[in-house]
Length: 204
Image (cartoon, rainbow, N blue to C red; front, side):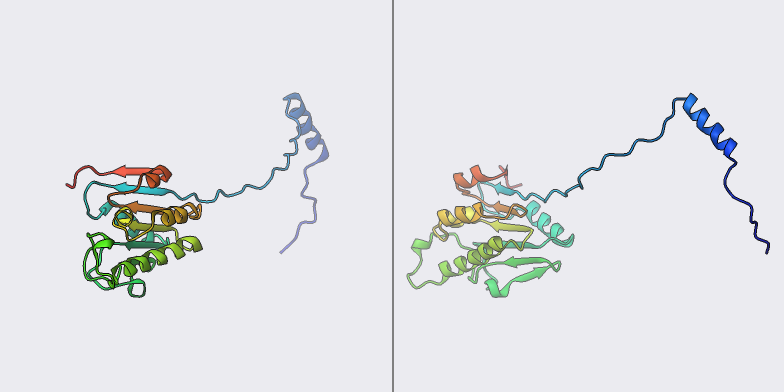
């Protein structure tokens, strides 16, 4: 192999000719770009959403949304505060999609009677309170992306949960967490606090 020792640069007269052509065309040297501050990513902003209806029932849109979010990697908890029948409780939660925790109180069936009408030694109010405390702790810890509280309003109306405590807790929710309330009898103060309110008027 023979290596060429000749210079690879263009002759000086050709470079000068190029400069003169650029000057005659009004093309000058590029100006230095001013230094700009680095871009900052905007933190995700969560919402307080309410799905309400005049009747009891499951909100399939909310449940499918929770499953989809968990499937895409979000940390999700669904708590059905007044629906029992499977003797779960906080320690018997069901895990779906690897990232969705499904909780129900450790009671024998769905609750529809006021807490005041139960026997004095009934464990039902404590079972509902245990689910709420688990949700409250996770909400304040900020280790969830989405929290669904099913029939929260009815649990307050029936006397199982304290409205002032619920309001105080929701006011402290992390800014990046979505909290979704579903069911009937949502208190007006919670409606006023919500970023989005969806009302279902018919059950079919």
